[in-house]
Image (tube, rainbow, N blue to C red):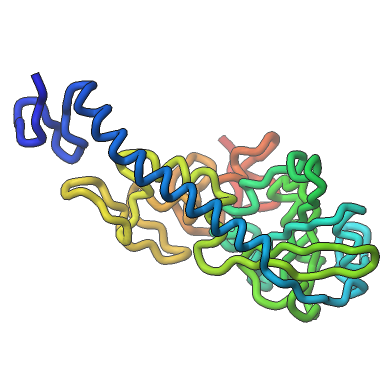
Length: 271
């Protein structure tokens, strides 16, 4: 017997209606038609993206990394293509005071081995000064190559907070693509998985069925009570959501060897 959405005896408040497997399968197949159309349109957009023109830039422009100043061309590591994430920076902020959104994006690209196998290099660029960036990279446990582009003109420098693609031809370098707004989301696999769940990302802007839990508006640096948007997630060493002298971007707590007092001095605490 099919259970209808209005059957109060079987349905659970704030959750999807309870139905039998055949009814679920029919609804799932109906949605699949739209999903496939979305996939095919995405393929068509990617094809158009590959046909965009490109702009030449100064490949000799110097960026600063672990080995000091190097020409931008070095970031290709001998490969023909380069993808960079431009990480925002707040001058003078403590490690835990850097951008949550950028932390989320950078954390989802732990390394670039699969890109490298396809002839694509990856690097993180930031507008921060290298003497502040270097200890932050160590604090977060990042293994990607990071570079300061302070004072470097766009498109190598310029605005932060997005993904940019470059192409190399010998000693010439070209800008081919740049994301805007939510264009960073493909990097963040967590968002894609959350979009598959019945509660979604839990944010106020989403279209939620009535009664579903919603996080609500979250301002950067001011966590909401309880569950909060994952890319604004900060906690202390005990996992309590907080913004304060001992809070950190949560991914930093998950890396091997992370301790409450590391890089925090007297502000940290032991268990």
